Length: 86
Image: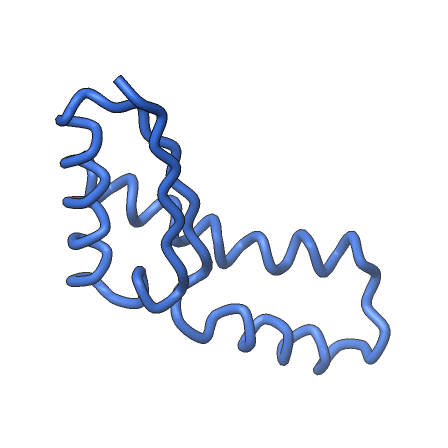
């Protein structure tokens, strides 16, 4: 049994069919007997959209609040991928 780390960028999780493809890859790795760690980015242009939204509010956002805002895009991908795996 190996520890497999899989990283999927925004294009890999940008829509339903690609999320299901990622879920298949993850499940295949797990079903092969491996421990799997999965890292996913925010979907498609989500990060750029969130940065634009922040710029509408302030030209100098705090680093902490930007981290929180940008993490929401990743949380969406995490939740959708988990739903596909279940």
